[in-house]
Image: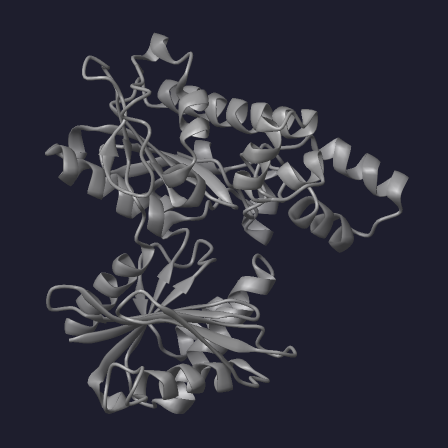
Length: 398
């Protein structure tokens, strides 16, 4: 069975084509700048080489159509006929409280995703355009939606509710949803496979630390808390997002800066976090380099960043009555040796003992805690696409 996985953003499409027999990746790449000048596709060839092709793509339909053309191309493609694709799986950021697990797309599901656009206007609108493009270009092909927040739907109400009038939850669905759920789900299961442990007996803290970052508490296989909230702005300090901030600071700044609500949201999402503190970059590699050169703001940003991760690890250890495994994943979590070491230092009181030598690893599965550490600390590269492909296959086979 061949499954195409699509992650359609507001102006981009990432794709991976799998042969589910052996879960081999047949083709992968990404379209950028849909609806803008100089749109292009970047294809990763089987030998690892990257090929960029410029192509005008006014909308998602043409973006998806060009992905199909590239998949069919005799030189760089992977299939001879679109009918070889048995199903398409989509990443959908916001399923609200409508969807607690992956679903096969029908008109009702499309309407449900559209109804949640208020909660994730940029993301959900892009996902919908992708779903409708596939429907127009490959009518009758089964499509599946895998929701970013579904893994977090097991959180108890006392963890997901905000302490605001209850009717705001009833009327406007304002609550903590959490994100990166597909990644938290994958790494929490994968780390138990790797260590030969039963997930139903383990208390796991999953650290998905990339440009966007979130931490989850996974107790006996179920998520009981997560750091992101109604939107991906809450929680940790991120590349360009502020993370947790006093709500009164937001209204105070709106008055001082003369910003409207949407302008303030943009400010906190795109001009804050590490970027806002340093005015250098939102890329942690550049911040680490600047800190090594003595840039004081970069040093400060790293301290703030690592301190907040440490606080959440401590909080979630308390919430679960202890912790057995801490797992690091995503761009920063898999590659930034310093962030892992600093965030885990001083956690000996909950049983964490790091091994600096073992921690000197990037982008591959590894145990990075000392052999006598009570808590096992690991790196597990995430693979959200394979989770989407597996869910798609399972639902289509039913």
